[in-house]
Structures are given as C-alpha cells and as structure tokens.
Amino acid sequence: MATLFNEISQDFSSCGEEGNSSDTTSDDSTALHSPTLLCRTPRVQRHRSRSTSSFSPFQSKSPIPFASWSKLRLCDTPSTPKSLLSKASQPFSSIKIGRHQRCLRFTSDSAKLIHAPSVNVNPFTPETVRRKSELQWRSDEDDSHDYRLKHSLTSSEEDDEAFLPPKRRAVQAFMLSRYESEFLELECIGVGEFGAVYKCVNRLDGCLYAIKRSRRPLAGSSNEQLALKEVYAHADDHMLIQNEYCDGGSLGDAIIKKKEQGEQLTEAELKDLLLQVAMGLKYIHSSGLAHLDLKPSNIFICQQPSADGGCEVESEGEDEDQSSAGVLYKIGDLGHVTSVSSPQVEEGDSRFLAKEILHEDYTHLPKADIFALGLTVLLAAGAPPLPPNGDQWHSLREGHLPPVPQALSPSFKGLLQSLLDPDPVKRPSAKELCKHTVLREKRTETLAAQLRWELNVEKFRTAMLEKELQEARQAALSPKQNFSLGLKPPMKVGSVPRIGRRLVGRKTTRSVSFGCPGYAV
Ligand SMILES: Nc1ncnc2c1ncn2[C@@H]1O[C@H](COP(=O)(O)OP(=O)(O)OP(=O)(O)O)[C@@H](O)[C@H]1O
Ligand SMILES: [Mg+2]
Image (cartoon, rainbow, N blue to C red):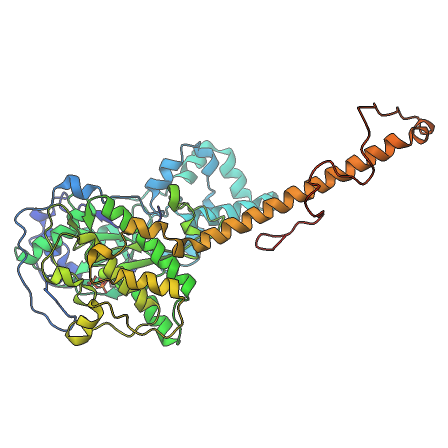
C-alpha cells in the first residue's frame, strides 16, 4: 500500500525541557522550548469556516489509548533511514559511498547546506542513493581520476567513515530549543490554521521534514487536548508535529496552481487520485478509525522517483500496481482521527462535512470520509470552491453534483455521484472503491497490453521453431545432398509431415513479428 499517512512525530516531552524552559515567550522562534506550547490546534470549530474564529471546547476526558493510535504508524517515510536500514540486511560494503559522494548533497539542491555544517547527510535517502549510484557509475568509468574513491575503497577505516554519516558534536541543547538544535529550518512552505509549516533538515538523520509549528501557546486550554489528540494519532508521546516532507506540496496547492493555468486534473489523473486516496482510507478504516478531515489541503503529493531511483513503494495484494502513476498521494493531518467504535467526533472542515455528521449520526463514520473524498475529487476536476454553509451546501448534500469544466465519462460521473449519496449506506466503502472496475480500467488495460506483448513473443518463438522444423524437413528430404556434404541422414520417425504444413498453431495466422506493449497483434 502506498497511500498512507506517513506522518511522524517526535518526542519532545522526554527531553526534560520542561524544567529548563522557563522561557514561555510567545515569540514563534522560541515558543517551541516548551512542549506545552505546542499542544494547540485551531481546529476546534464546529461547522467552521475559515473566516470565522469561534471555538468550542473539546470534550475528550482522556487521550485516545496509545494502542489504538500506534496502529497509525503505518510505515516509515521512504526518506527515513529506518526503512532503508531494515532493507539493508545486505552487507554494508554494498552501500559504501566515497567521501566525495557524501558531499554531493551539499552542492546540489540545497545550497544553504553548504553553510550548514551542523547538518548530517543521510546516505540512505532515495536522492542520496541515486546520486551515489550515478557517481559510482561515473567513477567506474574513470577510476584513475579519482584517487579519493580508490583510497576510500582500500581503507577499512575510511569505509566505515564513508558509510556512516559524518559525526557531529552534540549541539549544546541546553542553549537552544529542541527545534533549533535538532532542525535546520530551510523555508516556510505553508500556513494553516494551526500555525506555519516549515521545510527542515533534521541535523541528526539528514532527512527533510515538514515541521508544523504552533502559532501561539494554548497550554492548559481545551485546544491543548485536541492538539494532543493529533499527536497521539501520530504515535508515542510526541509534541512537535514532524511530518514527512512531501516534495509536491498539498493537493490543495496543486489544484490552485492548475486553476491559475486554466487546467484541471484529467479524468485518468482523477481516477488515479481517487484510487490512491481510497487505498489510504481503506487502511485507516480497516484499523477501526476514521479521518474526518479529508480535503485537498490534507492530501500530500510526493513525486514518484524514477524507476531506478531506489525508492520502493510498499505494495500489498490487489494494491500492488497502484504506484504506476507519476505521483503518490498521501493522506495527512490526523487531528480529527477518531475511533469508529467509540467515536469522539470533532468535525472537520464544514465544506467537506457529510450531513449525517452535522446531525451527530456517527453510525457510518468511514462513509463521511468517502463523502469528503468525492468532493475532493470534484474540486480536482475543476469544480468551483465549495460553500461552507447555505443553500448550496445543502444542495450538495442532496446529491447534486457541482459543475465541472470538463466532460467526464458517464461511468466515472456515476461513481462520483455514488460517493456523494445522501445515504451513507449507499456510498461505496473504501475497500469497494479499491476494486471498482471504473478505477481499475487502467490496470486492466496495462494487463491486456502485457498479455498482448507476451502473446507476440510466443508467436515469434513458434514461428522460429517452425522455420527450424522446415529446415530439418528439407534436410530429411534431400539425404543425398546431406551425404555429399558429409552429414548423417536424419532418423526416420514415422511419416514425415508435408512441407509447409505446420505442426503447431495451424489454426492461427502465421506471424513473425513482435512489437511493443500496447500495440495490437
Ligand atoms: N508534510 C508536508 N509536506 C509538504 N508540504 C506540507 C506538508 N504539510 C503541510 N505542508 C504545506 O503547508 C500548508 C499548510 O498546511 P497545514 O496543515 O498547516 O494547513 P492546512 O492543511 O491548509 O489547513 P488545516 O490547518 O486545516 O490543516 C499545506 O497546504 C502545504 O502546502
Ligand atoms: Mg493540513
């Protein structure tokens, strides 16, 4: 499964900073000294719209049990060393890198890192691995040029040094906040209701993260409980929300960008989006949870690495071919996640809210995610902005699809219509969506193309065999000629078939060509 909420949180409460952080200033750059300052979220509005700011207290008395939330640790980001290390049961020597290779990261996309010596470089990120193999390839071509690589391959000490990230002295943490000491902030990548999101490099593991920083302290407030809920959903006892950095930003950003260019996602792209997010929801729902805040700004995009990029996508059974598209969609923002069996519902964005949730009917919570998914796909198809309330809001909940500036196929339109069915029971489940023929068409086509190609190969082989057979027959019919050449006569086995008569595939048309996948035979 590839579409997962790969968000990772980090324990900022166990560092003993509570004692140290007498500084509880609300200044953004220092606010994160205190874990309590992070325990906030603005997302406590009921039927909220972005322009209003009324808050309702969160009723939760106790945090969600860890056992439930720990299920949310679905997989590691492909960028973390953890996932790659687990794969690296292979000997270290196979992933050694030379010193000069290690420096690549500093000289490419992140020029700032040149001046940031206190950041480690993770040798296991897909990008580093790709660069490493590129460089290895180049250096293989011209070994004599590269004394340093040669040296690193002959010295075991150097090998170790090359394999491991460069050692760094411990930052004087007591002088800095955890945020400052553990992360190098590169840029602000977005602002939400909770606060700002920053692209950061973790100084220790060298991976990129999106760090959500709260805008102002809310310690002790009801909002603290809600923020903690998001934190528990991420697992462990975390405070600062540290997410996998998704290089494509959010789907919301992508939709806005497309709109500015007068474009929308094509039907094929919409189907891919729907299928991928349905797969993520399938996992969430099968864990007994509902997301309840699904929307474009909470779906993140990762550009797919090239086939040889070394970044594998987890796959499982029927989901295995879903990563064939150019991008990976990942569900994020778990602040509203709740258990389906004992729900503590905090409504998400009112624009995506299913009517039954408004009526506090929580008997089909996963179907509320399906409803939000339907609206999300329609927005990506070019639908106008969704209303936060009013007549139009109700009209959408009565099953009236918003207009989209492209002609969608009736089957796909019918599927979207079913996602928005006023009756949650009639909406397809995430599991059903994952198997839906409308969404699996592409897979079927790919499979058909593959089969056609294999058939062509087999026909070609058959033709070659027939040709050889004919030659053998020819040789059998002219033994004298063979004798004159000093060859043995062929053994006579039964009656010799007539020339030109095929032994196999008599009923099929003869063909001696084979082409590429996707071309008809
Ligand atoms: N993990 C991430 N990877 C890349 N970009 C991210 C990531 N998380 C957030 N962003 C960027 O930051 C923006 C703000 O995210 P944030 O979750 O704070 O607000 P939001 O989703 O717009 O609203 P809400 O507060 O309701 O979640 C996103 O729209 C996206 O552009
Ligand atoms: Mg968000």
